[in-house]
Image 1: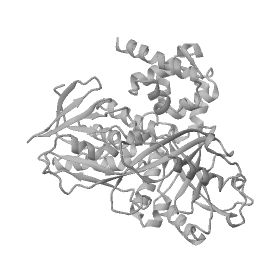
Image 2: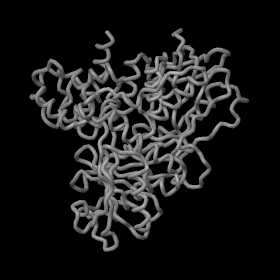
Image 3: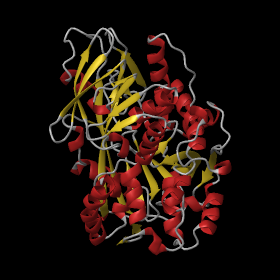
Image 4: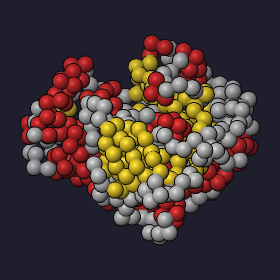
Length: 506
């Protein structure tokens, strides 16, 4: 592998794929390497919100909130199939925060950044409003508020950034670890290791380390000179855990629940039939891939739900749980709750440009990527204009961003598809659904049916175009079909994937 790239991006999460996409679109030759699967870590384990972060106003992080609110509007236009507005209902708890503080915070939230697609907040009488029906009838919490933020399929957002990067010429290598980075006068030599133990060597004029929770590990284990970068920042690992239960209320609205410790818990409609409950916040040490929800976290989330809703749950109601480790920039705060969600792009003191990304959040990944690539170009004395703010992600060129009208049109194009199956395709793939459906006139044209509306045509597309290699990649990251299909369907798919991959490689 003797190709010399303009830029090597290490890390296949949301920041890494966003950087690769931006750089490839500016004409750079780009290599992205990911030690596991795309979105295999934090970027598939978030609360899945594209939001300004209402609670960060309380800590004075106005610039961060304003930037995130601007990006919320931008991203909604770039991926209307993946990202959608959701109304959040906030019951007022006078023991947590006074009414005037929340009202003032929402006023700021409405006005810190321009908005065209998002409705402004309003007050609610929860004793009368339909959104109040699922809530426990507490005399003190009859008042409430409603405001809009956005929900996103986080893992698919990662995948689509990688797809666009590859379309623009980037090389994407998954299951490939960066074992060593050796600075030279005019380039970096990079040793890459595959799962079978093989080592490949390549080189790049610049490197960006966007490995999230592993950012420090990469720097410490890559053989870089020990004397370099004595002033580099530190990362703070914070675990956030979530529960998935059968839906505990009807309606499209989500809820934001204030807790006695001043943290918040979200209850969000999820995959039609479920409610997502999260998140917790606790400092974490150890391998981020081994993060699991604790008994204490489970109890905390259950207690938050049971104190707010008439529908009570217990531990046995949890159908699935997941934990993500957020790589926060360590600003020295005593509490994980107070730690900043901002990011820092650290420039290493090497002869050639190298940046490590510390911190960040899902909502601001695009602008982080834009700044990182612009800085690399500045360090090289080059100037190429940014472009990603106005270019939809793959599948996102939907007229007027009207996903309902798009689905209606696709019902005409593919009348043989069951409605829920077509809706899933539309939200997951947008206009790219045509890549594996075009020419089909009946379900049998989609190849082997593995069960539960999972067909071979979709699986071949994921293997060929989205770097899936295992049934888990398909069921839990490229989709959330793992929540919906039977064990028999999952087993059939697991048996079929190696055979299909062999056929594609032949």
